[in-house]
Length: 306
Image (tube, rainbow, N blue to C red):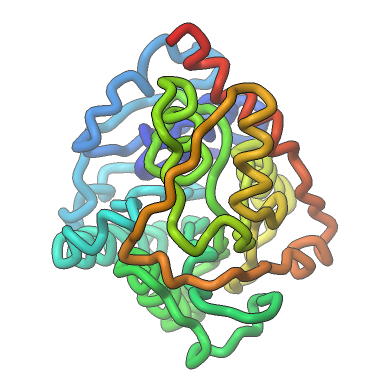
């Protein structure tokens, strides 16, 4: 059986590609990426056992996937993802991300391929209590264009439940090392700044606010679970390793590398603290509890000689 990973050179996509040999039923993996992020390094030194085939394609072309045959699964990682920068590139992000998903949906419906769609726990926005997937649409309060787009994507898939097998996974903030690692998300950015002895900038009101975080190890574990067990429920699931405050994350970094904190303003600094529940996915027998401290150490080790 064959698999397509869209955005396969990105932070998450490259980790999947690197580890895909662990799922024995996958015979070939097609990596699709437009390389606008210039992460050519994600393609370097790939092991033969991964059986990867790279295709430089832009999913804004709705026929871009038509040539692929015998594809049983699609993991859709392709999107513009920087929430903070999404305020500056709002129109471009809306157009790109929604068009890319339309292309993937069209392909999956035509080829009867099963889809893993990535959303974000940032769709919850301001929440006073622990939140789960039963949170009504009217109570979702996204704080960035990126998060609002994710809600639109989820709605697109809901309209196609009759013709499509899929899962939408609302991912926490990603931690961990991959060939396509990025440093715009909280933990990785903190680690980078700490490594070059630069102030770690924190949103003014965020130090003691909780956020959901997700290890790449747990991310792959979820995808592997779906493919191995034919787990496609046409439903939404929160995916996270744990909820932590920014202060707790910084303390984990500080154990390895002394840091200085600078409080800053941000377009999304008014986002309140919130916990995200993972009970729904756990009720299906999938336990996610990878060690975020280990991810932090691995990230700092990449930069230890600076």
